[in-house]
Image (tube, rainbow, N blue to C red; front, side, top):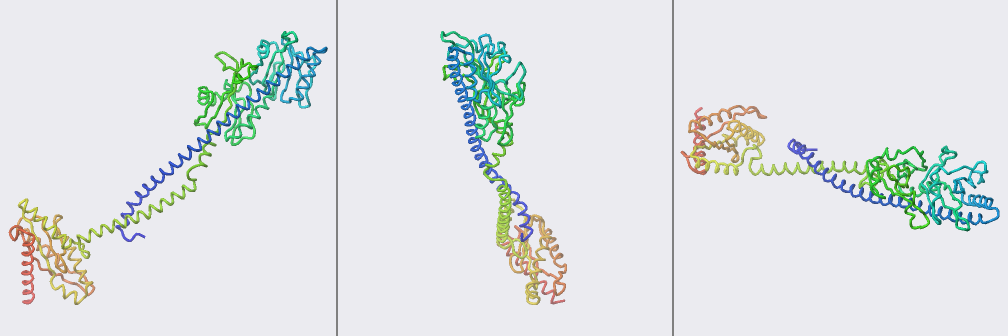
Length: 529
């Protein structure tokens, strides 16, 4: 509880300031802590997402190395079969056995140099089968055959991810495949055909998806043409979707991100759509193996229909990123609410302390210059003010005055009715003196029942006489005390500078003398009555 109105006014002015200062200070500290914590989380998350992209790219490279090695071994077996008495039957059996032991290959085929399938083995849920001769097709018009047939000895060509077509129609459900081709030679070193295997891309996509899940982002694969090959959404997704060939919505939906990915082959960046960690995969990276030909893995140029390669990407959506950052803030939301309440409490008590201190300071200053009972200037301050006023009058050659006032029969009042009544009389005299003064005058209680007024500037004795009469008239107004009405009577003496004295001491002495003269006259008048 605030003890008085002064403290209430000071508290009302101090509390908002204290609350603002403490709030800004603590907010700055918490904001700095949040920013540091946020930077640490972002750095850790970027490292985690970058590692996920690297892991996904390594999975692709390892898979392609394995598939390429498998094809090279398969071609060796085919070339051995061609030297036997029944070469086509041997090749068919080899492809069938190879399909059974390599379930990741959906098709294995051997074509002649004209592009006609000589042997084809299809893998199905009920097992691999050798396709009957009447179902064999010509692939002479397909781009992958036209490129593969020109391969020199020892070279393997890896084609970008594609969706399998049968007799020109897109196979449904979508069957993404990666084709790997190698030319076949006979004992004389003459090129006799092409071996092509279709790798089940879902196996690789699933591996990439699992690899990407080690991070907090969503694993995705995008072609260099902007096609969203594999897409996953949501928080820690459990499955992914494969998009159709015509669906190129990544480059359209996320145009800014797509442009940034085109600037570098790998990186991590943040946009309004979240955090993106990516790595461009070109099978030209398989250049460490001289047997792999990276022809179709170059970045497509203008007018080219080639896909060229992949972009493996881990994407942390903006909502998920905000949730991660919020969970790693310097202070949690409940803690911030509690801190705000604590700041308000501290500001409250601080404002109370400041208000109380300021009131006490004002009281100390006031007690040094004013009278505790009446609130008028005390004797010490009166003497100092009188000295300044006399000095000012001397400098400017002006007149000023001093009025000395004494309460008649005040001791009798105290003795008869008590000090409480006497104090009420002194307070009333102080109030009436203030009402009698001009704004430039100073009223003081010199001690006991003696009062004085410093008249800052007067024109002469008529002016001081009028002021004295005004004071006397105000004092004659009856004052209601507990025992009844009381008529205040005072004796007044006036001194004028420089006529009655040129120093504070002589002026006070003269005014005091005149006051006693007035008191004596009052007593004789009362006795005569």
